[in-house]
Image (cartoon, rainbow, N blue to C red; front, top):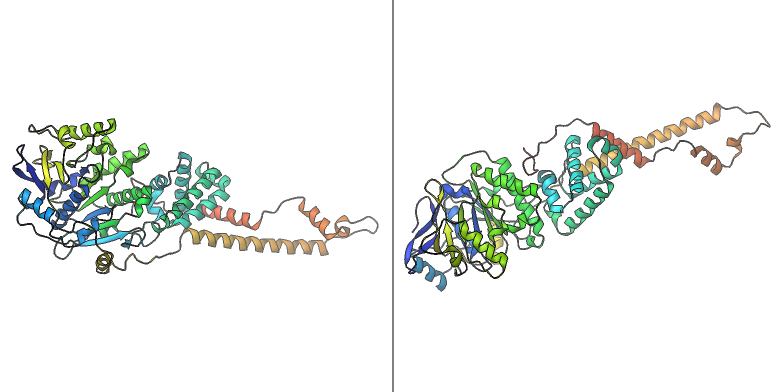
Length: 520
C-alpha cells in the first residue's frame, strides 16, 4: 500500500463496501495546503497524526499543536491493539509496522517542553493589538510606540519594556503628539490595563529572550526523517487568543525568513493549525486579509499549512479556496448552521457519481472520511469515502516520565530553557531618566548658589526705607520668591530630557513584515 513520493492516508471503499483503492497525498503537492474537518470524536487527531508520520518519514519537518494532550504519543512506538489490527486488515495494510518518531516538545510555559519565546518587537503592533483585542485608537498608540522604539534605538523585548515605554509616552503625550500624532492618555491607560491582564494570563512567559529560531523547528535526524515539533497547548488553550496569536506569529516568521523555492519535490515544512476557528473568530478584516495573503504566498517558500477545525465554515472563503488537500470527517446536521456546513463541505469536493456527498458526510463512522487530494497537474481528485489507516506510533499520550526522557535527549536541550534579560527599553529609559534627573539636580544647586551669592554681596539698603525680602520671615520670603516663575520638578525635567533624546536620535528604522514582525 505504501508508494514512493506519496503519503498513504487510507483505503477507499466501493458502494458494496469492498476495497476500492489506496488514497494518497502526493508529496509534491504537500505545500498546496490542506483542511481537516469534522465533529468532535470523529478522528481528526488521528488523521493529523498519520499525516505527520508520513511527512516525517519522507524527511519533512512538522510543527503541530497538541491541544488535548494525546498527540504526544507520536514519540513512542505503537502498541498492538485489536481495533487497530482490525482496521489494518480491513484496508489491506500489509505489513502493519509500528514505529516511534523523532519529537521535540515545546511549551510556552516551559512545563511540558522547551520554552518558546519571541520579543515584543518581533510580534509587531498588528499581532499585539489582536492579542490585546485593542480598539482602533489603542492600535494607533501601539503603532506610535513601536515607531518611537525603532527611531530611538529602544529594544522592546518583554512586557516590562513596553510598559516602561507606555509610561514615558503617557507622561509626555503632549510633546510626542506634535511629532508622531495624537496620543491619548486614556488609550495609554487602557493598554496598560490590558498588559496587566495578559501578564495574569501568563503571556509574560511568551515574551523575552532567547527567542525561538525558525531553524530549530525545521530539523531533520541523521537517518533523514523530519523532526516533529509538538507544542503542548492544553494549558495554553485556557487563553485561546494567545494560542491563535502565537501560531499566527510563527506562520508570519516562516513567511518572512524562508527563501523562495518555487514548487519543490516535497515541502520544507508542514504546519498544522489545530482549532483553526480561534484564528478567525472576531478577527478584524485587515488581519484576515493578511492571513489569506500569507497562506497564498507561503506555498512558494515550501511550507504547507493544514487547518484543523470542526466546521468548514470556521475558515473564511478566501482562505478555504487556497486549501487543495481535504479530509472531511463526519458532521452533524441538526441546526440550520450545521446543515449549511454540510452543504458547504459537500460543494467543495469534486463529485463522485457513486454517492451523494451531503448524505454521506452525516453518516461517516469514526475514523472514516471523505478524502480528496491534488493529483496530476494539481487538480483535485474525485472524492472518495475512505477508511483512514491506523497510526504507526502510539495512539494516546506519553507518560510524564516518557515525556521527560524525550526532552532530555532533545537536540535543542539547553538552548531555550534559561531566561536571558539583556539591556533593553526598560533599562535604557531608566538610565536616561536617572541621568537627566542628576543633571537637573546639579543645575538647581548651581542656580541656588548663584542666587545666594547675588543676594549676599550685590544688594544695598538705606536705613528706614524698609527691606521686605530681608525682614520677612523665611517661610513668607520663600512663598514670595516662588510666586513668580515656577521651576519644573526633577521628574518633569528628566522626562522632557528623555523625550528630546528619543525624538532627536537618528536611528535606522526597522522594516516590519506583512504581519508586523521584523524583517531581519
